[in-house]
Length: 240
Image 1 (cartoon, helix red, strand yellow):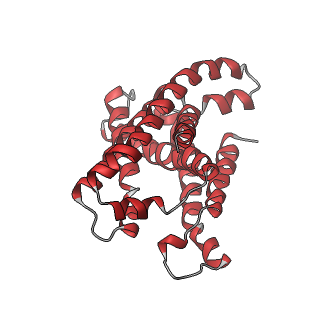
Image 2 (cartoon, one colour; image 1 turned 60 degrees about the horizontal axis):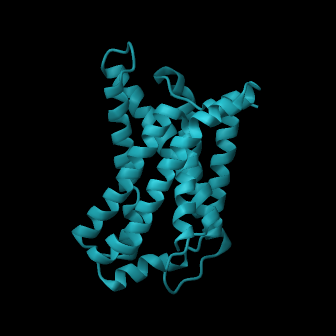
């Protein structure tokens, strides 16, 4: 088994976990058939396959990768990799989890009306989906796919050579910005005309985690970003 095989399998498991979520609130008054629910999964499946392919082609060129998976496949001492990844991943996940709690309990009620808050809360996403899709598939899409692509493009534009920190920081920021913007379609499905303050709050509270997860990917490997993202959802769930 190769690196990309594992990434593709776990990414598609994350996509499959979307089946557990209820989409009925997005189309009030209509009952979604099993066929329609399956079709909803087509787009994230295609994007996940593309992200795995892009990342696999570009990771080595910009010096980023999956050290834990590589160690397991090569039967090296993976405990050393875990010891390097775990502290930063857990601390970052805790910080992001606390930010998610603050967003739900303090920020969101302060920037929008009660009806919008209720509408956003009425779309339940099981913890398993948040861990598998949020923690794994979203990291494949935004870090392994987008961030690596941006880093590679910037590296090529600057004349190749060494991949310097400014290039990677720019890639982290660009991927985090798209990660944040990717949460807006759900908002507009719930609220036709959301307040500017609500849009800004959603963008900011997703951009900050995107920066942190991008930094983890850069400094500790993709698995650290995945662990951290998944752990953040666990922290948030404990306070729910």
